[in-house]
Image (cartoon, rainbow, N blue to C red):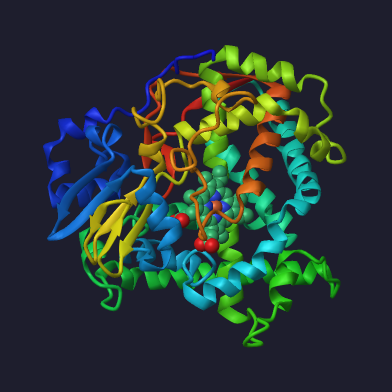
Length: 458
Ligand code: HEM
């Protein structure tokens, strides 16, 4: 297996050790709101279980496969999302698929699943190819000046999500939507200590301000949908929006209407674009700093027709490109941690979990764990090529696992593979400066400052 050292180091868990405050309750709360990656101590990358106290409550960083299987699959009903997660996400996602629970969740999942099933890939690939072609055309027409590929990928992924799921052209409202999201995630979307300690039934001071954001957000989604309806002039495009608005629960006969429909649209657009956009950003960054990998990928895609009519068929040939995507998701998992809180006391793979304990099952830690990977810090797509031993299912889980596994995983993998292939087919991708790129995590794993790139036509 060829091993390629990543040219620039990832964030060092040593930052944690250098800041003694990050092992106290207040210190943990602070880093969770600023850069949650620093809340994982160095020994978490070597041990199966790390226990610590957080204002009288147990926190567990869990790397033991049997424990993960128990919590996310075998006894998942005993675990819920934490109050802080719900507070952060609810203003934008409401009670859509990601935050719903119990019977309501089961119904939503059954309804949405067909629209994201593998048979939709050919149609999806057409949307991806069209939107990517237009971005590449624009980038190629611009001068060779520095480009912010994080922002470019965020707009591209938003356009793909809007067009493919809801027949929405995002260019008109995309900027407004992203501005609102960014302003929210810079301040109110970050949990503070009270968000973590207060039970959900007691509003935290920030919850009051979050209600105002929710109102503005719902207004925006309403306008997006109204515009779609006006353009469709009574014709039903037969997309996910139509499917959701027509769906009826066979048991209760109820459907998605009003705010519930808006929440579903918002959930799928947000969950469906921000994660894929940052994955694409990290993949392009890794290609820029490892030219040998970039050239091998370019050789694979040279001459392949990635246009709207052929992109879906091309996927089977993009074996190395897909390995680069998988390895990127290992080193920079956009969803850096899954967090669950135990309803009742439990025993998970031999580990005692008291009632109320908060468990972190963190792809960021699992994917760089020294006992689970050889040379975990190296960028080596060869790990995911056919013939390499497959990773353990609990050591590699960028999309989670169990009943709440990501419903858009195939969508995301198709999009990331096709966009990466098209970008590398069109350009030599280089960094425009040599500033270190530091990953930070609040909701997703992002660069602290978006670095600039230089694109040269191939
Ligand atoms: C690289 C891209 C993506 C990554 C890394 C990712 C990651 C994840 C993870 C880890 C979860 C499980 C969370 C948990 O168990 O707490 C999840 C759930 C979810 N994802 Fe994704 N996701 C991606 C793309 C997408 C796309 C493209 C869509 C929609 C088209 C999507 C929609 C959702 C939804 C709705 C859920 C909640 C599922 C449920 O609770 O039943 N995601 N995602």
